[in-house]
Structures are given as structure tokens and as C-alpha cells.
Length: 309
Length: 309
Image (cartoon, rainbow over all chains, first blue to last red; front, side, top):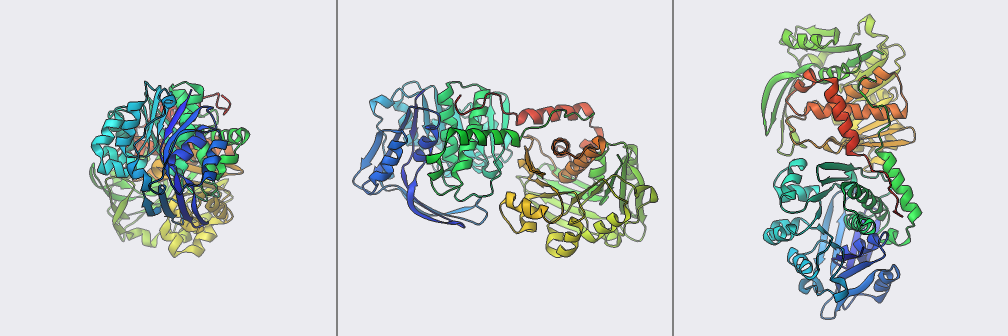
């Protein structure tokens, strides 16, 4: 199945206790497409870059086989730029700069070839823009959405409108609590799923992710890593791996969603081990299979578990 | 195998957004023994209570088959008392009162019949007292220890001495970071295990627990509960279920430790559903088996998980 990712392609400047990387390739659509390409042969990107965006970065995506027919260059302004600094424990970060630049005027106009995409993966963007994208796609098989606290607080009506039209929402635990107004995640999940998305993924960073689908709850562990260099892009990589795996298998059952969560988690566990999307570029299927096996082992309860034992 | 639990038997006053319970039965040794009794027929309690401690609470433990030969009454003072208030999200709590009372002068003097206990489970106490207990037990098969940030900060030397003598340490993630001086939990685990305990459990509350033993890391999920009324005693219940299961099976392999972590997690998931130890009193093996099966299902990755799928 084809997969369309709409989001940002941008510059990131990232500081962590382990170093600093300036104006590296970033953006949600970058991570989503690079991760999805690991599974799907037909990955389409829609995003805008500015006059300052280097051809080398564009080539990097093209070389990885991402369809860039929908990558628009707006020569009236610079590219979207984000700068952040992570604290020593890497669970906290300060945003140092957010320059929307070309993103402020981004109105997606999908190439005709994109309008029949099967899986639509909407990275964090203004929900009005996300709605605009959905209006241009004919009967997608699966719509997966990311959002963040800014839109929950500032554009709740538009967010609720787009939520009614998505199949899967992936947000972090703080966002789930804010969106539902409920601190208990099980109750929060019920409230959020009543807003539209039949399937909800709550990302918990180093603590893994919870999947709510049908009558099933699935808990994927966080992979215990010794060397986390840069958490930037982990959530988008998760999303791309998750949606890409589903596009590959074309199966939207609870079991398939569980497998997709593990695939997304495995890819995200690689991306944090270096700055930017670097780890995604050289990754082999064998490496990912090994990591997936390790994930499986990590939470596997041995046989013979009964209180009467 | 026999199991000896040393800790507190106390009054707790607990406020949560769901209600308030005043001067109810509490204390680490209470939760540990009630949980351990679920698995082991020979559970021995050593603790001190004061002149104000009601016989009805003592009877409650006796009826559950806990050996109280080592429950000492000190008529010179009142019982240990703790009061706390949980915030709306239940992950945060304020301690409103800690009255040591008889605990200030507690010097364990084990009954002779306790001195050959197989599994020794040391609840959170002054590490000097924990050492004192270990000096009185002849060659235990397994020593399991709990501690908290107060002792890490204030009596590091005594804590390090007791750590050299234990097999399993169970602490929460914040304590693991503080004890090791390392924010990354995988690195923290290595540092802490070099201090003595070959096996380490890092409790993460609603996010479950990590077990480090041998070359193995095991991640147990937190059980998604809709109704958490009172988190008090969850950690001690985990400890008692963990140690009690090991006493029952008399097997100290990585697989057995994994099963024990799931058992402890399952019992802890019950105890938080009501105030105090109430849930532990009426629990059946069938209920726990059902919860354990649900735990297993919660993190079970479906077959057929390969990137090439």
C-alpha cells in the first residue's frame, strides 16, 4: 500500500549533554518517511521548505527512495527552524527557538498522484492544515494522526474536527491527559476514543507505549538503552515505523497494530542513539529484526506462571 | 521455604482525591507479609508496635496465618504513624506527618525460631537496623532489600554496608538515579549491582518494573487500571509477592525472578484499588491467576513479527 506523510521538513539545532548539532536535517515528515521507507516501497512526502534549504538534504531523502513530488519550495522565506536543549536526564527539554518561516503560509496542495494514497500519516501540524490534507485524499484506508499540546490548548475545535476523521491517534501521556482532562490513562483513552479515533497510542518515552484498539490494551516496553544521544524525532520515527509497517502488511487487525507498535518502537530506539535522523539512514533489516527480537524477549514472561506453582 | 519480613507495622492516614482513611492498618511489614502469605505457608514477621496498637489489627494478621512470634509491643510509646496526601494524578504525594514513636528505639532481637529463615525480606528501615537483622540470621538463601531516598542521602555508608550483603535490591527509578548518581537507568543498574546486589528491580509505579539479573533485562508492564484509590503499600506488596513467590518455588533463576516480578506486580495492582491492605485480605488464587493471565496478555507480542513480513 502507498503511504502519504504530511508534516515538516526543517532545520533542527539540538543541544544535549552529549554534544550539539547545528542546523541538521529534521522535521516530522523527514523522520516519518525515512522510517516508513523501511517497510513500504511507496512513501510520499508532502511538505514545504524555504529558500535556504540545501539540495544535499533533499538528495538524502531522494536517495532513500522517498517520493518527493509533493515537496514544495517556497522562495519567499526560510525553512522551518527548531532549536532545543535537553536536560541531563533527557526526559526534559527546553525549546530555545521555533521559527515557522515558510510553515506559516503552508497550504498543502497534493499532487494528483498523491490523492489516492492508502495510508495517510499526518505529522504534528495546525489541525486546520491536517483537515485540508484529508479533504484532498480520496477514501484512504487508514488515517494516522499526531498532534501536540499547543493545538490542544489553542485550537481545540479544529483539533476535534480532525479527530473525528482519523483512525489512529498517537500522542504522549501528558497530551492524552490534557486532551481528555483526565489523569487516569485508561479513562483518558476511553474519552479520547469517543472523539473519533478507534485506535489510540499513548507514547510514554523511555517507558514505552500503550495501544488501545478494539477491546485490547497492549503495552510495549521502552527499550533499555545505555546511550541515548538525542531524543529528537523519536516520536515521528515511531509513527513512521508504525504506519509504514501497516502499509506493508495492509492488515488493520489488533494483532497487526501490536506488531506495528513494536516495529515503531524498534525504529525509534535506533534513532535516539545518534543526532538527527543519522541512524535511520544506514539501518539494515537484519539490525531491526535483531532489535525486534530483543524487544520480544524483554517482556516475555516465562511459561509456568501460576500462583499454585 | 520460610520467609522472614522485617519492617514496620503502623497506622496510616491517607488522603486521596477519592477519599480519606484515618489511622488504618499500614506499615511495610504488614503489606509484605500479607502479600507473601499468598504464596508461602511460613511467613514470619518482625516489627514493633506501641501501646496504642489495637488487638483487632494484630488479630487480622494472625488470622491470615502470619507468624507473629516476632511482633514486639513497646509500651513506652505510641506506634509508628504516617500521614500522606496524594495529588490528583496519584503519582505525586506529600508526607503530612511521620511520627517514628516506638520505631526510634527499635532494635530487632529475632526469636530463635526466626534465625534460620530461608528468604529474608527487609522492608524500608534504617540500614543499621537492616544490618542488625542480617547479623542474626544464619546463612539465608536469599536476602531482598528495600530502601528509600532518606537513607541514600543521610546514611550512605551504612546503606552501602547492607547492600554488600543482599541478593536483590528493589527501589524506584528516582532512588536508582540518586543512589548511582546516573540518570540513565541501564548505567545506573550496572553501578548499583557493583555495590552488591546481583539482582536489581527498578519499580516505576504506573510504568511497571525493570528487572536486571544475570545478563537479562526484563520489563514488566504496569497494569492499566481505571480505579486507583490508594497507592500506599503498592511497593511493599510488590516486594512481598516477589519474595513470597520465590520462597514458594525455592528457585532463584532468571526465569523464576521474572515470574516473581509478575506475581509481585499482579498483587500490587490489586492493593491500589482500595484504601490500605483491604484488597489483600479477601483475594483468591483464582483472582490473582486471572490478573496474571491479563498481565501476560498485555505485553504479549503476536507471532510473525519480522520486518520482511
